[in-house]
Length: 164
Image (cartoon, rainbow, N blue to C red):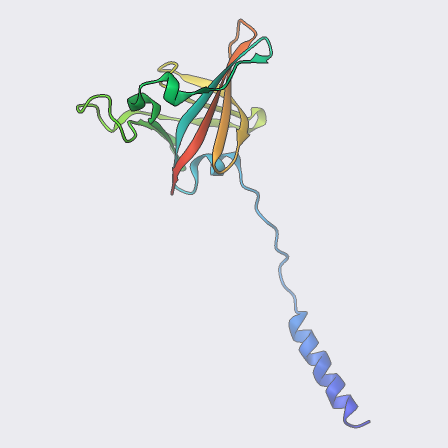
């Protein structure tokens, strides 16, 4: 009996060590902006376009078949800095040797309440447009631009190229 009491006390002491107070682990959900920019910056390449007219989506059009390779490999870089810098870069293939690596510098804006990303997509215009985020993961982003006066939209899919 004398041997059992010290053994039980030692067992309780060891159990107390392993059941001490600790902060509960609460995972932090990844936000749209973190998926968009990574921790420093993330480059995306446009891969497909779809036209949606009166609710009917067209065939998915591969960018490689639609544009010259020097345009199809352009990259769109979203920075995680305070200024929310955005750059459009030439990618691996330049259309002209004199073209700068970065041909557009601007900023981006994210409106979480409406899942809207505003930025300049040079293939469409030189002004910021509001794109509705249809899907955003670490590797794929699908955005849709709705025309105001007609029941039509463009749906763009981008793939992540680099992340830092």
